Structure formats: structure tokens, C-alpha cells
Length: 449
Image (cartoon, rainbow, N blue to C red):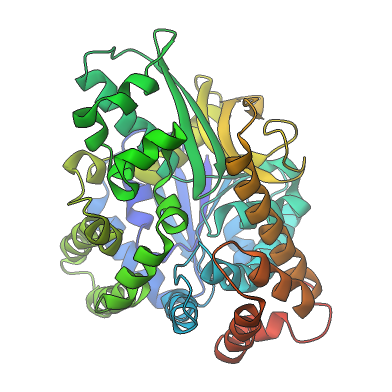
């Protein structure tokens, strides 16, 4: 079976390859990237990771060549690279709002320039590999997955490791309380980077209320430490870590502003040094060292500002998104049917959201495909936030497809983390001035992907 990885020169590709080499139905991996030098650096890492039985690796900068014969396409592209991410973050911060790559103004700017590229990729998949499943990890994940579904329908599935990691942390805490260690059923609902764990049933009993009542057990959950145990108890659910930006907005902005660099700037500097030195000698060792530093510093400013402390070793050692992708491919290829939290077309799974909206919910996955499971109705506070952010995502998609600056302005102005229409106008003007990708999309004409 052939897997094509778009963004194949990306830093995290070796994580995917290591998961595949541990046993998977994949026999060939094709890495595609617009940068031949980055492909060469990552290929050097993979060659040093390879062992008997590992998938063969091919590299190309030609998209159609990469897609030919693929059964699965893993999309992890970053339009404008990390340099673009730093502008997503800094432009927002300069206007007094959150600067983060997927959440708020930065996510809108990222989406505006990524949607046309992602839809062009979807069109080429439809033409060259129409039977392939597309597994999307490109951010903003729910927005990009929804845009690609306009072309490929439900054969595009978005993945993220955040909700799965949250559920695993909760399950470990419940096991530590002596409340059961068997298979568990997760009640999780939301959008990508915006969802809640509302229940976790072990042996048929929802143990989440007991977890929320136990100080020691709840303190072991990083998400609870980020927003505060009292707040978690007040909403009766464990929030995705990215909800820190909504629940503690002022603190998040202050922490990011006071840091010596944004996350994008840190990663840009780190990866420029890695790729510059990544020749065939010692490439794997250098990659491993950079990866360890990257993992340990994830959301560091938020953890420091909230007093959440260092990341748990078990979280750093977790399977991550590469394990999610492997399990999804295995199930779709005829492996055991399983339940996974994925980004899929809503249908009627989440009452109150449009049928075509991409949501993040537990799904039944198997040879038949991916079926979202129905969720219980959300309280007004949660549903209202999802409806508002989903409307922003859909306006951003439409703005990117049509070139409408009016829709782009509406997306900025109606996001709950942008507190003024005047600021929204300034953000739109600044992103158009500083990011050529945004300016090209909003050039006053209809833009075809």
C-alpha cells in the first residue's frame, strides 16, 4: 500500500515513518514537498531510521507524480512556512489580540492563504488518485478539512492528537484513583482545538464526575491546571488545551508578549539551524535532539502563566498524531473496527451545527469508512461558542474561494477573540500588506484554487 505525505520535508515526518516502520499495511512512502533541500534533509533522517521491513521511501517535488497510485494521502503542508506563521502571530499581537497559529486572527490569516492551496491539492487527488483517502493534519484542521470536502466529499478526514491525549490523561487519572482500568468510552465534542471531554465511561459507569471531585487526580490533568480546577468543575467537563486561549485570553496574550519569542519564531530559528546542518552524517541524532527540545517547550508560556508546571513525561512520550494516522489507515484498510475522535462532516452528530460543518467527535472507523457517532445536546454556552467559531471558519473558506475582502473582514470581526470591528479592519489590512499569500487571495477578484 502506498502512502503519500504532502509536506514531506516537514520536521515531524520522521515521527510518521517511525510509526509505519513499527508495523503497518504501508509498503511505500512518497514524500512530496516544494523544497528539494528539505526533502533531502528528511530523507537523510529516514535512511538512518530505516530497518528491515520498513516502507521504501521515494521523494518528489511533482504533485501529480507524488499522488499517482496512492491509497492514502497524508496532508501536512504549511503555506508560507514558519516565516508565515511568525507573521500570523506578530500581526495579531501588534493589534492587541491573541497571536496563535490556529486560534483567533492568526488562524484566519493562515486559513485564507491555505484554503486555495488545499483545494487545489484536493482537485489533483480527485484527478490522479480518486480512490485515495486524504488524512488532513494541515491547520487550521477543521477549516481545511471542510474546504477539501467541497471537492472530495467524506473521503477527507481530519486528525488531531489533542483530544486523544486529553482522553488518555483522564483515563490514567481514573485508573490511578482505582476506578477501573478497562476499555473506556469517551464523550467528546467540539471543533478542532475547541472541544470538551464531557464523560468517560469505564465498565459502563461515567467516572468523570469522580475525577472532577478529586483534587489530586484532577491536578494530574494538564488542561485542568491550565484553566484552574475551579473552572473545570464549574463547567463540568475537561476542556481541550486550546480553550485556555478563550478562558484566559488576557493572561495568554500577556504571557506570549512577555516571552522572548513567539512559538513560531522559536520553531523557525530551531528548524533553520536543523535544516542547514542536516547532511547525511548524524542527521538522525540532530533531529532527535531538536525534537526533544520542541516537545518539552510546547505551550510553555501558557503553562508558566497559569502555573500548570512542566509537561508530564507520559504526555511527551505519547503516540501523538502519527499514531492517530496509523490507526486510522489500519482501520480503513480492513483492520479491526475502532472508535476514534476525528474531524468529519457533521451530518446530525452535533445538534445545532450545520450538516456540512466539520466537527471533532468520536467516530466508528472500519472498512466501511468513517461514521460520526451522535452526541448529546450541548449547553448554550458551549454550543454558542462552537456556532460562532464555525461561522467564522465558513466565512474564511468562502472568502478564500471567492476573493471576498468583505467576508474576510466579517470573519475577523465576528471571531470571539477579536473585540472590535475597527481592530478587525486593521488586522485585515495588516495581513494583506505583510503576507503576499493573503493579498493574492483577496485581490478584488474571484480566485480559483
